Image 1 (cartoon, helix red, strand yellow):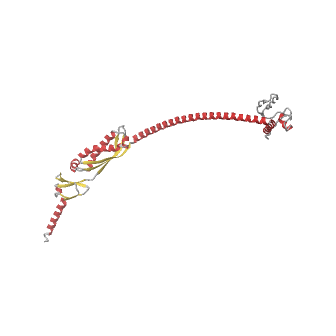
Image 2: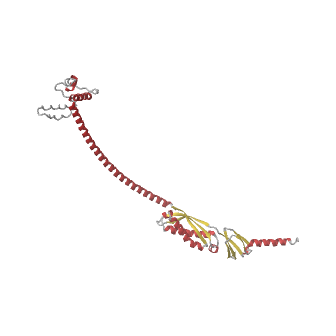
Image 3: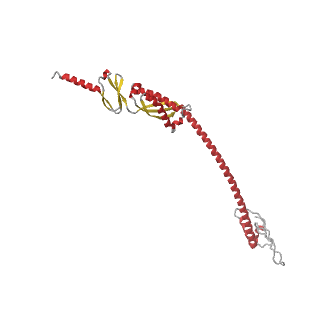
Length: 330
């Protein structure tokens, strides 16, 4: 029994080795190609435990695991030319998955790096074609989604030849290059300055119209106000003269006295004015004769206009004496 133990151990080891070399596991993120002497004999797309012929080291049956997830490939700083002739820098990425492992194995030997290298060339060409038909503003507008769909549709036939399925294409960034950025800034600055000049000119024109209209209205208002003031002044002067005439007719003696007192108050207002007059001057007659009845005396100050002579109703009556003439002004 002791001599048989090594043989049993060897047999068990061989069995375990055969089982290990015959079993392979495919998880949910993978799919497997079963190769026999380099030819694909089976494709395992579902996760699980599978068996194959042993002795893979003799190149009998081998297993190549391939990604079954949606993969992402980024392409940065693509220099594209738009319809206006200017260049812009674009960042984009592709979301794809390996849809046909057999074609993928035949086209790029199942290597993702080789597949992405080919996608890079095709994505670059598709972006140049799509941008070349549009101007820069299109990538910043609602047309951006249409541009991404066009790039995706252009990539799909080439991707299918690689065993790939393009899920989506996204443009992450569209920027001006340094020289185009400065040119665009200068152009926008010139446009804004021109627009400011136009607005300023319109404002000046409107201001001149408003000023001219306001000046005209001022002239009209002032002229109308002066007209009304002259009318009111004339009416006031007429009323004043009528009032003086009425007062003079009612009591000429008191009116003479009142006017003389006003003349005294105006001339002798305490300002230190020196007056050289004769004591017998008409100006001082109320100082000499408080009653103002001195013969030939005339009242001081401006006098009202003489009243019209009264006409007697009786034919035998004498004509009324004319009113006293106004003396010279102060």
